[in-house]
Image: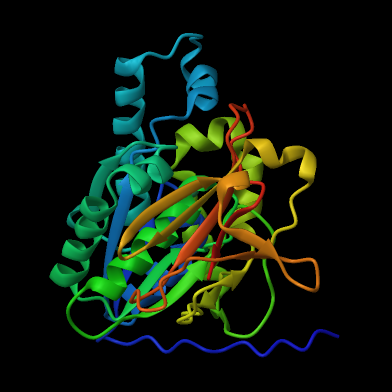
Amino acid sequence: MSREADMSLSLNARTRLLVVAPHPDDESIATGELILQVRQAGGEVQILLLTNGDNNPWPQRWVERRLRIGADERRRWGERRRTEVTQALAQLGVTGEALQPLGWPDMGITRRLCDQLDASVEMVVQCLEAFRPTLVALPALGDHHPDHGAAHVLTRLAVAGADGEAPRMLAYLVHGQEVTGKGRVKLDSSVGIHATKMAALACHRSQMALSGKRMRRLADRGERYQAVRGTSVAAESAVLPWQPSRLLQRWLRLTLVDERGVRQWPWRQAPLSMDGQGRYVLHGLDPAAPGPRFLKLHMNLPSPWIFDRWGWCEL
Ligand SMILES: [Zn+2]
């Protein structure tokens, strides 16, 4: 028998929920019931939609029966998905004005984070300071979709840098294995609430056409969140959670991100050592750097596989 120590969530008319969604459909798959329950409790909801989900060629080829997808076709597909997310939100009791689209490049949030960190964080800060959420639902750092992990990093940096009382943060996982542990928050549900969520999901017709089964499977899980607690500690070095094969090391890169900026190294030039237990240790961290600090390990090779193999960790 599992011994789950799930935390509860109390929602009321003072709850102000901000959902950070990298793509249209994440809001329904991961947080549809949460959105609905905040609205039913009389609270407010806003959706920060980072991309229009326009870099989505296989569903587009399938639905539109065309092979070549150019810039115009992509833009049109993004507009279509924006319409779908508006329809989904209406099912969940949220009006179109609650949608804050940033129009960042789909499959390009990591690049954006690396190239325009301050400007990107500032856009999220502005949203936080204008809406003043009490609760932020954000993608899990360990989600295997690179846009999701990068969205977590940007949101955490923005929360750390925004004025006002820090909101409670709940991370949701769409792609990858759920990590069970302390701080898990489970949302109560009912047949009616779940049916409304699935009706919202069905509004994403462009996605349901090719991947309806997978989408329904993802959305059918009970909504569970991980309470976000900062783990960054002031230290000059940190043990890494990864043990990449020596054969791969020539293609690996490390990306370190904190409020001070972005630093990147090829693996073999990074300030690494090995400790007595055979673990890699990264040196040269600034113990005085404020706020959360994140590191990504990734392979610097073009690949048709979009998902992260190692991804991000918090140092
Ligand atoms: Zn997504």
